[in-house]
Image (tube, rainbow, N blue to C red; front, side):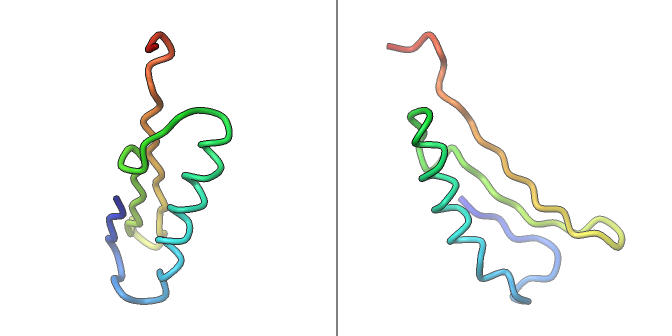
Length: 62
């Protein structure tokens, strides 16, 4: 899931590709569901903050 905050529609076309690449890289190390990776881009004052949240599977799960 990708959430866009801040200045929508102004050059953030890379977010879907970033999401896909994150899934590929993280999948090399652990099983992860695409829905468990969330990306948001928000504006905080003069800064734009890219937040990536990844929910990893339980280490004790079979």
